[in-house]
Image 1 (cartoon, rainbow, N blue to C red):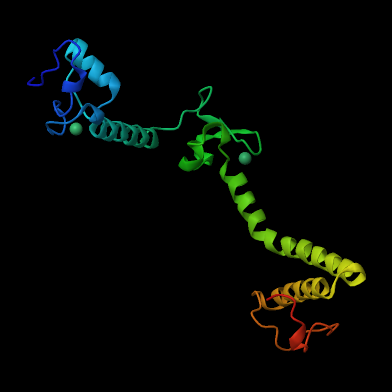
Image 2: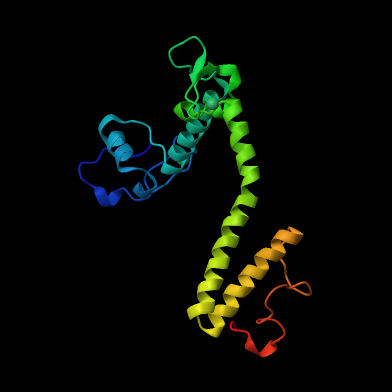
Length: 195
Ligand SMILES: [Zn+2]
Ligand SMILES: [Zn+2]
């Protein structure tokens, strides 16, 4: 230890007087260390490590712990290798769960439930479309009754866009032909409500 921290209260002398045993940097100021390590260095002559090294070591430790957790077999509650699925609430053999699911602990879902959720998600878009279409129609109806020209235009084009989406499976960029029903908002270039 070559640092001279032994002085009584010479705080102003600290600057540039510390060295990190980890990275070997010398002439560091007290600001490069945590207050606690300075304190421990002064009182118990604990080797100093700069905050950067302490941080790096902590990050390494966290990574190692995470890797260890990933490699370790999932903790089965109650033994017997069964895990209770958080979705269907049934105890199932750990083999019914993916490792990723098992790592969620109490929130783990069994393979069946994950598959079911995936199927539901895949089926969702058409349902979502119905809901959006209904909503748009409703909005258009209301706008027709009480809305301004701009509001009617916006509502009607929303409905038309949804219809187009349904037909092509794509969001229409331009609704060329086939705009059915009321043509009130079509073919009037000057009435665009939005700038
Ligand atoms: Zn260091
Ligand atoms: Zn389940």
